[in-house]
Length: 145
Figure 1 (cartoon, one colour):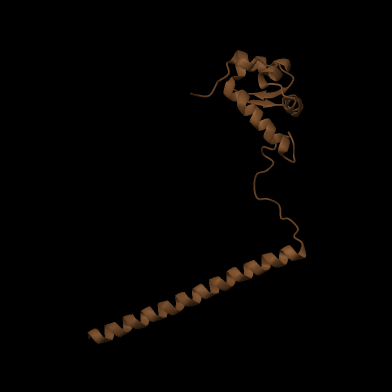
Figure 2 (cartoon, rainbow, N blue to C red):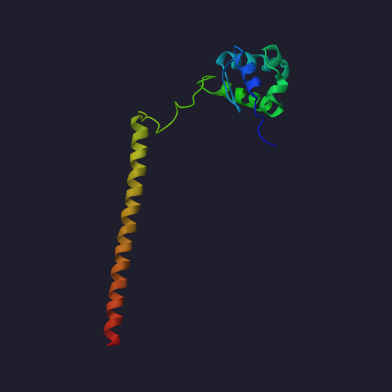
């Protein structure tokens, strides 16, 4: 089963809906208002097809899997702190540095210190083993002569 691709006519029909922001051959971007209305109606016990029809969509054009995914995505959006706002492109890159409380900063520094101690111990052991290996190598070369 492949992706349900929209024809040019279906794209135009979907784009004419006031709740649609953008349409491509394979995806639809819905407005925040639509997501809010959909979620409110869905939590009242109404089915996705019924809600979509009422809001001006043809459920058959969207397809079964797209309706199912829509329900799951809107439920997930409702649980986010940002709500239904489209966060694509805004959460990229490294997260900003968060101010730590003195206790959290101390715990982080202690952990970092412990890691550095382990690294120093490792390097000391490696250096000792390298010296022993070199000593054994020299000793063997002297006994062979």
